Length: 215
Image (tube, rainbow, N blue to C red; front, side, top):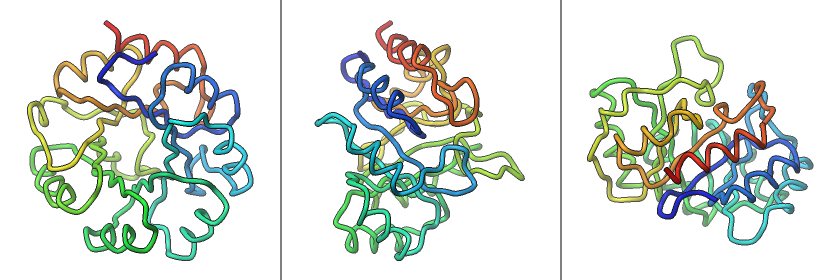
């Protein structure tokens, strides 16, 4: 089980066994990816089946990237989702509009690489229900997240925003305890850090990630 006070989101789950492993590790959230370029992308049928496997009390998050209204409508019509994660270039105005349109909490991912990137976190912190402080994707990367690359955690040490926030970007069982110590994060997100290959989660690494937060 994850340490008391640190909530974990296991993202990019693609199989029933991943959902079971995340639940056994004490997940507070599980994430399903709806982005065709990602190796973790799910069809609506597959996502619905996985979402129905999620135990009560664990929030189901749909990760989307600059999705259109029609694409979001299709997802929400088929898959029982609790939170929308916006992982593209959605503007603050788009975040506000989607909350009104969907009636769901909006989690906005913001990439950080240097101190200059922090100002936009403040902007989204005024309109989103939660912010995901992620590592900025490397130049030329095909994916906006899930690249397994951390940022300098000292950049956000002691910082707070008006809404809850979650730390992401290159977290692994080996470094998550240090990341939490340096940033004061009370929520963390992991995807590639608990995989044996892109999109293939390892139940042992999922368990190890949660166990690292107990130390």
